[in-house]
Length: 414
Image (cartoon, rainbow, N blue to C red; front, top):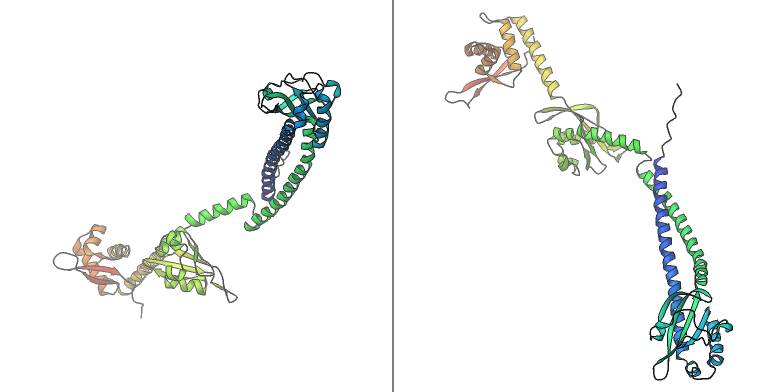
């Protein structure tokens, strides 16, 4: 069977670079489009302001207004209009009377003919700004009224620039904009590569699947291990503690994390943590027997991070103690025998019942073994007399104090 080739996965470095490059390209293109729109609007507004200033200047010239009363107005207006048009770098300057008859035009053959676009707005006394198509083509133009000394509208002045020239100016200015965008994109890519390197260094150059495995391992350590883990930094502050570790020292993880180890942990554990104990040392923590191991907080004479491992051996300790006690009882019984009237089998049952409890009364042992309280008391008194059990008075009972028994180790044979 032919083996299937698995597709190669992109490394985290490649993914970060690709994502940042995509974001950078989208942002750069969007910024470029916006900048281009603003640039085009700025060029158009600049021409509008210039055209409006030129048109109003022409309309207010006394020479132009007086020429409207001449028999041949164009002979005076045409030369003035052409000089202003060339000086202002405009496509045309057209002066017309109230009937729309031209007194000036870049093409002298069109002088004396009616204008090709609607002059109603400037003839009404308003200023027109917009795009229209005339004899020279589509142009961005401004039209203003020409008023007499009395203030009445006697004609119009129309100035404009061809849309093709506007586009040429925009494209000319677009070159530096594209250059700036490319430079920004290049700088952004270099910055993205640097950021990627920093991020990779911070995560120790791990790939996503490795990070996932570490997270799962951390989750197991924190919440599923039965062994307690406590990590302390070089300043003696607890930086990590799992659930089992907090439970063994009788504290909450929230209160332990960030606390000083010398103040939050029992002195025995602090000593092991500082000195180091790779083979493990038993420590009594309340009712528990715990074996503590530590890497030590000093490396080559300098303070370093230390890890404390705690394992609960309470159950194992109890089992060993009970087995040792039972073995000692058997050995003692084999050496000395039991008094008349006591059964070795029943004595074994009483020993096991007493070993299963911290302490017990004769009544409790009798109920456990389904025997009479008097018989249970005889066996318990026998164990106390041979030193295999200790007897103490129980003052919690009503009336006369009762006796409670606790199994102890048997004396060694002499």
